[in-house]
Length: 114
Ligand SMILES: [Zn+2]
Image (cartoon, rainbow, N blue to C red; front, side, top):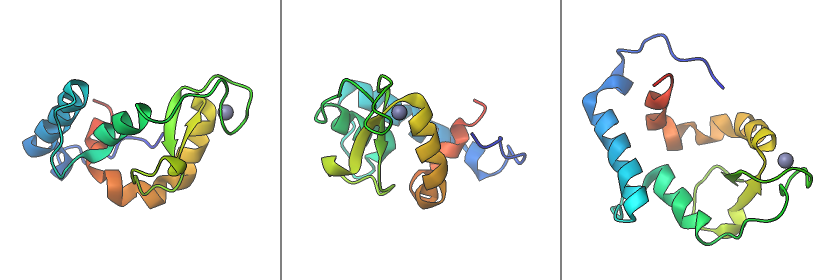
């Protein structure tokens, strides 16, 4: 994972960011967060409920899948864009897609070191 940005008091630490983040988490659990700003976590839940978890990681086909990953980094509700990966494959994929995903999940950077 990327190291925490040193400028912790930058805009990511604004209260709005934290509020938005916790709302998203709670909403995803309750299934009541359905605004336009659905966000990464709720979409994950949506896909998780629809994309069946396979026996093995869809990439290495050996380990148990733990994480749902978005193949394209666009986070659409297209199940074909999503795959179940084991932790190590997911990490590798994440690193590869970091640039693509930056604009989609930049607000999540506030989770860093939390
Ligand atoms: Zn794997």
